[in-house]
Image (cartoon, rainbow, N blue to C red; front, side, top):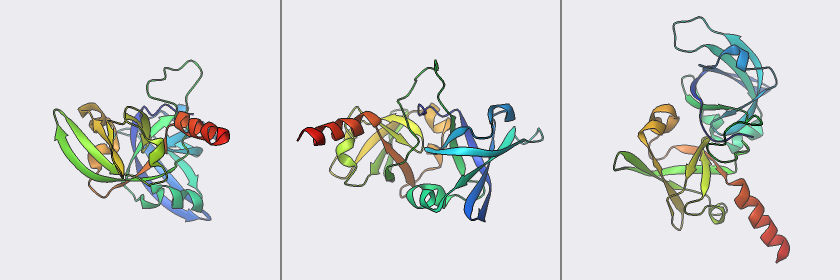
Length: 204
């Protein structure tokens, strides 16, 4: 489990095809924080650390770790779009007693949202996203979504999508600054919305 509060913006260092796809990611995390077998949320996708090594100082990154992505993961998320240099939102797994600053995020992507438009709104930017019709019933104004692993509050919904406001801090510490209209992001609906819908189905 995660909270959707990004704690580092890493960068793809290599993509290797070897049965599954192995992805190497440079990060500012200390290598001691990257235990083999640990879960890391990478752009909203829960992945397992399979190798980790320290990096020489001077390039801004402290360590490099590897994750393996199956063909299904590549098909269902935007990891298949990753290339060397792609920025990646990172968050370590939630520990008992940690502050829940965002909302409960599982790291299991439900589908894509696509940036429709970006426009200034005060000091923030309003991002409008198109989302799959099958997921729209789970997205409500003032509810929560995770986009590329970032916990966000929905500010409005329409027939085909929804909008969020991105404050300057979030633009700086996440990959939102690199997004443009047409960018695909990993969308995870609120876990509570999923279970409420399931309970409603069971009672109908």
